[in-house]
Picture 1: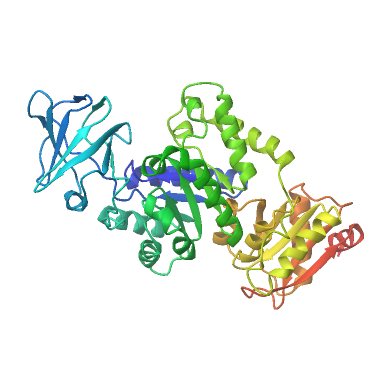
Picture 2 (picture 1 turned 90 degrees about the vertical axis):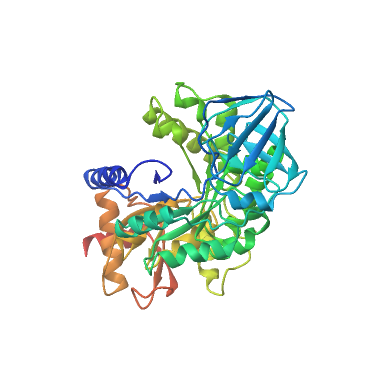
Length: 447
């Protein structure tokens, strides 16, 4: 999947990128997903007359009025932020982090303005990020710019929308309303301490999660990030929604040819935890050799999957009474050493539910909609193959096997487990398991 980062770039810039992606898809006869990462209300200091060289015990004053920041005395500084209403919610003793977490300040006075004492050295420049890890800021996570960006995503039919700085499920409901009925899927970016506290509510209203470790590592103690990451992956796996692990996964490869051993282990451990997706940011967006980075990450994933804990049928409760079908499919596929699982799905739900059980074999997926097909690229173990529209299951199976054969991924001597819904084409109707032996495969290919 490709991520379009709407914290940067114009609509015209992103449209060029999107057109390039879709041209490459067509040229390579393949399918990828597109995720639009909505920037959200990033809190920043305003412009400064000059950079501040801050030292411990310096005092920084936050004014509610918009102010060009300046040095007020020997050890005193004055700034404003772009969301001044937050200042009235601060309490003495709470912390403010400047420059995306690199400078720590403790609130010492709250009146018509807020004063904080600097606790470590650092240089602050204009428009740098600000975090409030102890304060429920309660701002609208969908800005006017975000509304315009989401409308762009709907118009251009992106597959996923990643919503930044989510605080609770209501934020995701608001985002869903902005889709105006468009069937795009919503990813909740978990990067605030209150999002962690409200995670079950957020999951209920989301189609997937992103472990956004950048801001999360500022909002919560750094030593909590690994356990929160594992918790978010576990909860996503349990309910059968995809989860993305993001930020600094191979950061050193932005400029270096090789990743550090720690980065390699980080990617591998996210895979072993059960993440569906590992994400690259600046490594591939502005890095020196993005192809090398993607190949490196792919190699780490492939090697790690050799020791992956497959077969999780017994670890999860059924999502609904028909979930026994998907559970049985994965057990049959593993017990019979199948060459693949074939999931024929109208909405994509059947493929996602099979993926939840983590079978050893790949899940070759066919849908009635190109939109659904592209969205399944994010789901663990799923290989979206093609759209298919036939009136009967027999015709569908024939077309599916022909397509797999054309793509040179069909093992004619192997065995496949297929899930089919009757009547065909009705969402949520998966009710049949069919075992396709080598003799049946040859029969269908020659019909």
